[in-house]
Image (cartoon, rainbow, N blue to C red; front, side, top):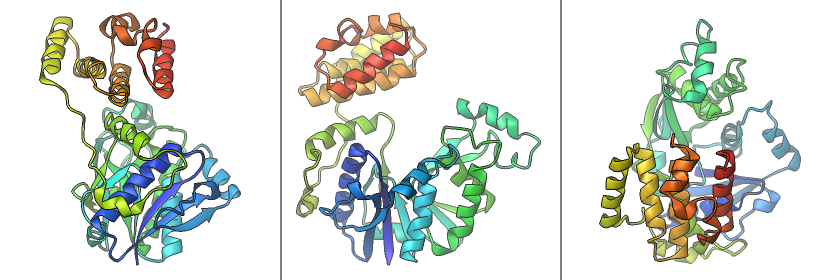
Length: 345
């Protein structure tokens, strides 16, 4: 039996909302010949969804969280999924949505190949890895850890029972002395490097699955807060009516205004888009829309090289003295307050 495998444990209300949408999107396209395995601790069971549960003990979840500071939860889920099912699996991140029948993913899994969500660039340009790359020069890891090393999006990971050797290499790489203390993207890198090490033929799931990230996660989460209230069961009979979630509209007058403002103030692309998001937030017809755009604006401003004073001047209704009156949700307000505090304002 081909199996979709999800992992949810700990205090995970957002992951549970994401799981609901991902599984409903799978149901919308049909589950013929597919089962779903949810690896979870006891509080995260989902009797309202068509899943088979594998319950993790408290000791197991504690051990997974303390692997010498090396986060290998997807690796552990992959190992456990293969062990429990004995067949081909697709390990799915919860922040995914199906665009096609899940069966088509398993048609892409072949001996000697590997299914991932997409190509995700290279180590080059990822500043967190500069020191690691330097540390690996002249060592046996240099062929895997270098600026030109490929990175793959492992939001979808298709595996066969014969892939245990690949998983062994993933763990070996992740725990190597040179990179084990690297906090960012270590598991993604270890999978990517192991795939390259074994010279696998890489196949992508991007035409079948959406893995939403970046600012789009705020768009999805804004919809989820209305669609999946905490603790409320999901009505799977309505899967055929599941709405597609797309980027909210950016009115042309606001785009033109942002472009002119950006040219006048010599903004980079991220700061310009953050300013556009700010304009869209306070033009949004709903409180939900305002909150989504305010989160997007913050994401962009976190990448901006502008000073806190400049950002506050550009976004006056989100500045420290005005933000309490912006009508934002508590979590969004907390994010902005943390941003201003970190910038010394």
